[in-house]
Length: 229
Image 1 (cartoon, rainbow, N blue to C red):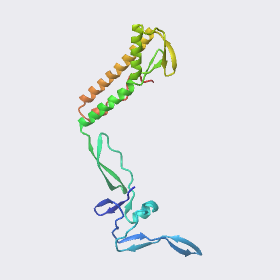
Image 2: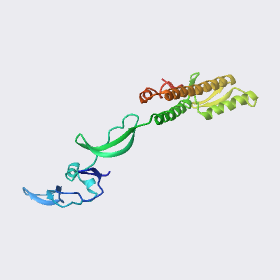
Image 3: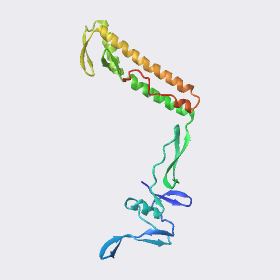
C-alpha cells in the first residue's frame, strides 16, 4: 500500500521524496534512563529543512506517527453509486478522514442496456442447463444430456436398440421405456424453450426502458423455469 503526502495542493503518492518543513518529527530510537529504568524512546524534535525517511516507515510507524509528517494510509472509498462507473480515483480528506475518493460518471443508458442483455443471456444459460424435476426425478437439461436423449430416442425409433433401457441419471441408473423417454425429452424441450421465452421477455423490457429507474425495476433473477422453491 502506498502512503499519501498531504500538500497545499492536495494529496500525492509518497515515493520517499523529502517532506517539506518545518515539522515536528520523530527522531531515531534513543536509550534513556528514567526513574532508574533504562528504556528506548523516540522523541519529537522540530526540523526546518526537508526531511527524508525510508519507505519502510510505512510498515513500522503508526498512523499517528505518520500523520506528524502529513503521511496517511487512505481509508477505502465509498461504494460506487448505482449505474455509475469509476472514471478516476483520488485521495481527499472527507469529514476529517483521509480516504480514497472515486470520481464517477453515470453509465450511458445504451451501455447499461447492453450489459443487462449480456447478464440476462448468462442467467438464461444457468436456468436452461440447471435441470428440471419430472416424475419425481431430477432431469439434467444440459445440452450434452439433451443430445444423448435425442440420439437414444432416434435409436429406439429406428430399432437399433430395444426398450426399456437403463438410463444413467445423476443419482444412478433407472429403467426407462421408450414412451417414458419421449416424455422426458418433451419436458426438456419445453423447459429449454421456456427459458428462452423468459430471456426474450426480459430483453424486450430492457430495450423498452426509457431511463435507469426503469432498468432498476427489472428483476433478471426471478421467474426462471426449473427454479426449486
